[in-house]
Each structure stands twice: as C-alpha cells, then as structure tokens.
Length: 223
Image 1 (spheres, rainbow, N blue to C red):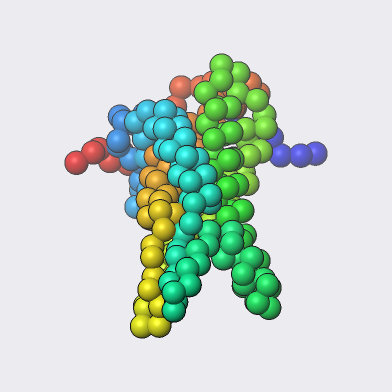
Image 2: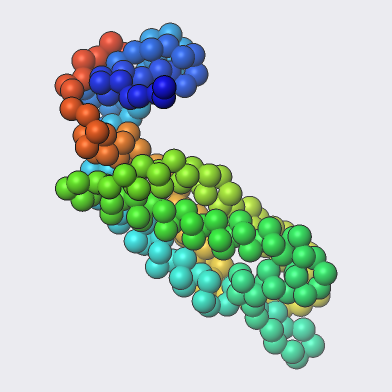
C-alpha cells in the first residue's frame, strides 16, 4: 500500500500549524492566510511563468559573463594579475586551501548553475501543453540548490578581503564583480516571482481530474 494524492487539489495542510484547509480563489497579487496561525499559505503571483522565464534567461546571461571575465585585478610593484571566480577557487586549491577552494567552487559556481538550470528546465517544461513528470522531480530538488547557492556570501568575503589588501596593492574591480552583484538580485527576483503551486497544478491534471477549489481560508487582498 502506498500514499495516493487526494482528489481535491485545493485541500492543503498549513506548514506551520498543520491545519487542514482549502485554498480559495484568489485575485492576482492576493494571498491566502491560515485562520489559525495567520501564516501565509499561498500568494497568487501574476503571470508567474513568463516573468520567471524572463528573469531566468537574464540570470543565464549574467552567469556566463560572470564566470568568463575577470572578477578582480591587482597591481603590486608594477606587476599586474587578474582572476575569475573559478580561477580564485583554483588558486585556493593550489595554495593548500583545498576545502575552502572546493566550497567556493560549489557554492559560487556549481550550485548557482544548478539553481538556474533547474529553474529554466522547470519553467520550460511547465509551459508545455502536457507537462512531463520530470518537471515535478526537478521541482522537488530545486529548493536544495537554492539553499547552497551563496554568491552573496562570497561577495561579502571579497569585499572584506579588498578592504584588508587596499593598503598593500592597487585593486582593480573587474566586470564580473559588478555582474555578480546584479546576478544576486536577479536570482532573488527569480525565486520571488516563481509560483511552485501553479507548476504542481499543471502536472497533476495528467494524473487526476481537476476540481474547482472552494475556499475556507482567509483571503487577503492586495494593498
């Protein structure tokens, strides 16, 4: 025996207090809150897939640029040197900081690439007339890539290092440094505009009949 999805797709349990309830019909921009703990259950994001797709494509371009052009340049006693994000992780590895180098490579290069790639695949798959089942599989693992994507943490570390070495060398910020800052905000906007519930509903219709939702939750309109 195994668990099976319920027929009523509007029936959910609050993630905070476990109250079982139904999501009402919401206008774009409105949100539904739990009547017991007043936590937000769902917010109806307007044109979620198209907006997320646009931000994801922008993130792809910025990610490629950020990892192909120099991030920092240094001038010390007439000698110039520059490095990229991947080059910085390689220098850490070569200088004996293997664990730090691997963490920088994973959190600043690999995890963001997975976050952007999975989101692009999820959105493109969900926009198809018959969304395949692998969209749901990718959607389950996408939050993990978002947790490990830590470009902003790396940027804070870079700024601290720049302050410390400013008295000993001339620091030349590269284009990648500015692109990474923009990428941080693009990734945040990408996550904020994405509506996972809309994607799940598009996949579920292949397994069971769609039902019209009836609301018992507290509907909160836009301000």
